[in-house]
Length: 429
Image (cartoon, rainbow, N blue to C red):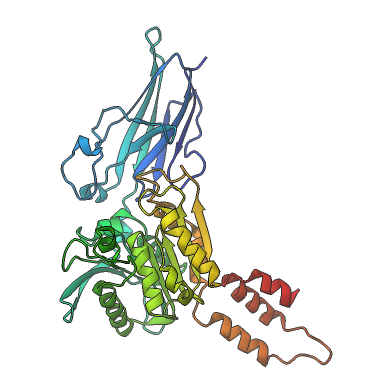
């Protein structure tokens, strides 16, 4: 009998194991995405054996050059801890800045043994790609606002085949609290919020410009896109008031619209964590400015939720998010949107599905969702209005209530993208 019966290795973005375990196969090669910070190993084994899991690479925190084991940093060769909540071992992958310059290679060794039997050993060779080629397509720049005396560094991607004769969508990604005091390049390294769109664009799919601005600290540590940090510190009665950084961002967007050929009807806004709070506020403060909104682990002001009506939204959240707890953030947002009759799409990740660094990091799954990316690019301001006008102009034959096939298909796509499937069934059956 084999001491190890099964090994399942998953990352936040996978439902199934990234390896197909065979007790007779002792080595596996696996490539994981650039924003993968951990691999969860669930091992089924004979209880008479002891399981030892090790990794041959240190794993530290982003923004810290030195390792601190008391903060959970990982030392090469030390045993990977078992997490009862996830029923498995989590192999942490190094997040320190220097390790993103090249692909990261880590060998995980799984050994089963007891006092009578040396057992078996298996190795999983993990390769985390750096995405350096995509990151190099971004240009780092800075926008200074004299009124607020705020510098706003930003990363901007422009398609390699950019032409002034063509109008391009613009995707804007708002980072979370952790990126405020790091170099602006951290936005591209720590998550695929910006790079995934550039990667698609370079392949000729959903061609666009991508803006990744940085919310720098101008006044004190409570600065953010909104008053979220002030609210947490007890210095504000609401986490939803806009801070000057959002105004500066709006002015930066205006500058880019002058400098580049941007399609006003296809500007998309994305936010994660505190950036999601900021994205909601931006959409409320500038109604009809954004063709689509994607938020991950955030919240909108319930008192102003009705002002989001008409803005296509896809909301993502983990049910066990320990930082932006759904009961106090997501649930009130959804309740307010429903009461206001605002249409939206919602993905709630069940408990235990997003595991590292915690369930808060659901954006690792969000940006790999190809359906979400295609959905966002199908949105445009006035898309439904233009179809309605075309329907009105289409002459119907006497005694017939039918419309042209072309117009019907256009209407179906527009209504579906606005989340009004029932309307299609009622009007066009």
